[in-house]
Image 1: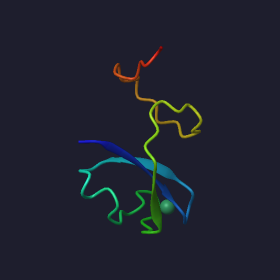
Image 2: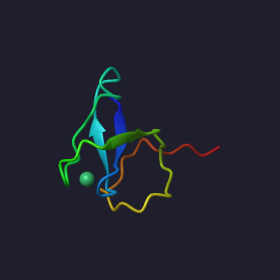
Image 3: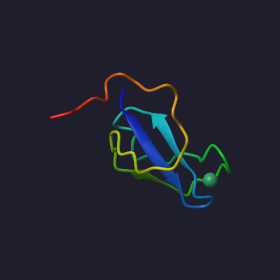
Image 4: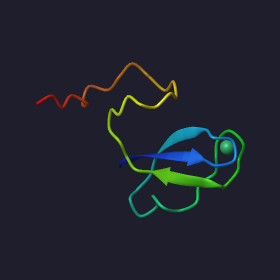
Length: 66
Ligand SMILES: [Zn+2]
């Protein structure tokens, strides 16, 4: 099941959810403020540009060096 990233327009929080692709665009509540004003972001793998501190020890499947 793919991991999707969402952003809350109400509080600005970004969060990730594991959802099936058929659910990816369905409304989802912000886990922080429970607003449904959330938007799915394009899934960016290892984009390093995010400032959300969700590092959980690192998954080993993200190496894509060329
Ligand atoms: Zn929120």
